[in-house]
Amino acid sequence: MKLRILFFLMAAAIQCLLVAHAEGGCPPGQYPQQGQGWQTCVPIPGAANQQPPPPPPPQWVSQWQAIATDKQKAVLGSSMGRSSSGDSERAAISDCHAKGGVDCEIQISYRNGCVSMVVGNNTMNTQGAATKGEADAAALTKCGGADTECRVYYSACNAAVRVQ
Image: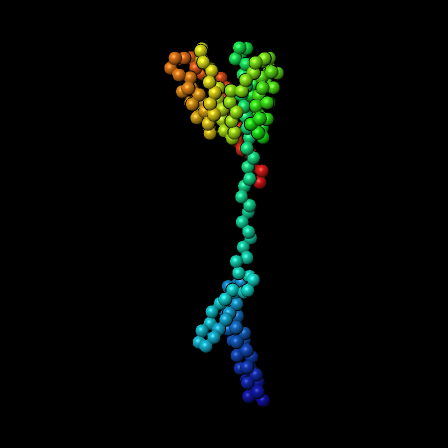
């Protein structure tokens, strides 16, 4: 009887060792595989590389702005945040007319950046650039050495809008 109990306990211990050995210590998503004298872990079919797909790239919508002026009456009209150059220019001319301008003309139409208008005693100049400082500097440089009273009269920035 003692021999049967001892035999039973040994069989249970061996069974526990085999179960523990069969797990193989493989990381999640892999299972053990063995052959004559070797053992390794291999990926579970269909479980390998199940990473979520990368997010879609961001999508941007351009924003346009424009400046229109009536030089004779010294009236400035502007627009910002428009979806096209034509829409922006029409809005700037409309704004110029609404402020009392009669012969309103587009001076600049610019997408996704900054515009600057510089005026002096004898000149008026508009420029566009990536930043307000760059637009102001470019417009002041264009004003020239002949007109020493140049100053920034109008400056605005308009950036693209992320929609996704």
